Image 1 (cartoon, helix red, strand yellow):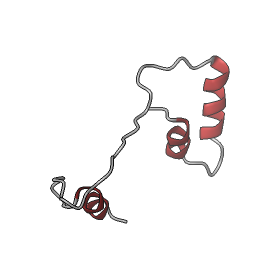
Image 2: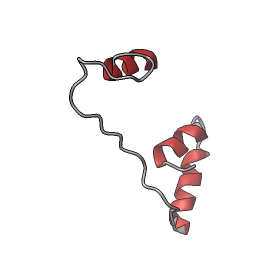
Image 3: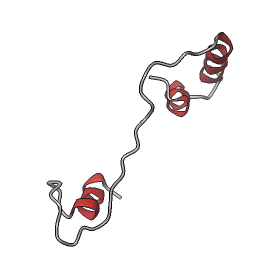
Image 4: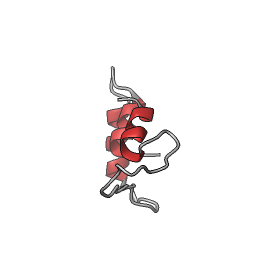
Length: 67
C-alpha cells in the first residue's frame, strides 16, 4: 500500500482533511524519548552483529533502534 493510499483511507483525502465517513480514533505510538545508557557488553554485541559478513549495518541499527 502506498503512503498516499494509506492517508486517504485514514483521513479521506491526501490533504489530511477528515471526511464525514471517517470515524474512530487514530493512535500514533512513537519511540521512547531520551538518551539510552548502553552497557559496554551491549555495545560490543551490537558492533559484533553489525560487522558480521553479509550483514548490513543499517539493518542492525534499525532493529536495535540505534540512531
